[in-house]
Image (cartoon, rainbow, N blue to C red; front, side):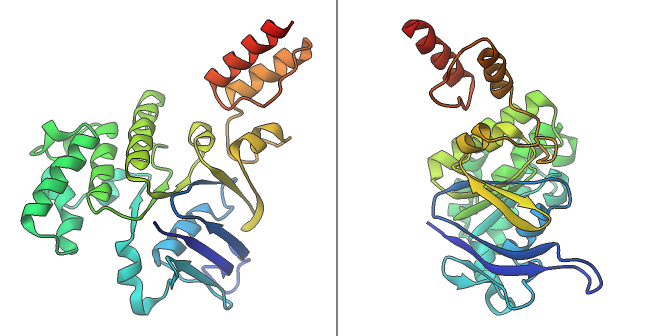
Length: 278
């Protein structure tokens, strides 16, 4: 179970530009599912790069993964603990078949062949792609490609998984299916999860939400607190949740909610409870 800490982190790609990440401090506890949101250009994807050690903090800031500082001299140990699912699954494909592609990360880690075979099989079963072992990844549908990319990451058994807009290139049905797959695997394996997302449904499933504004930490709160507050949803890069729109319409007609519902089930329960009392 792995903890992530950002301590006064600054970063910019060029010396003559403003800070993309500025004085950023936050902690993600072991086993937490944290969503990072904000408008385009707020620094979300840069945070993923910083966690992976693809770029490094500047101006004396530091990042720690499992107590170990993210730095060049031991970046290999850090990266072995982290798996990352990208927005475009094709950027992760290196094998000529689905099986070869899932095997790639295991080969790099020196996993014994017998164990590798078991992990590949289990990971493909977990994502519903065990019948496509010998298929070429580039001939799969968008949703199938993303499932294979997820299998490749999960096969390495990371302590932390970073989802960088992992469902944004899919249609609504595909997005929903992949989100369910990811959610189920994360719960089964109890991994620390960081979701960089514009999908409000993914945000509602998180334990905590980190809101970035101009590279700074704007707020850190729970999904329920986010729904209960007054926010410009367009500015956050999110579509206003359907349950919140329905709740607000009912409130105009005198309905009173004890708690802000997170999903359809809670909304129905709240309306049922209110009607029972009245």
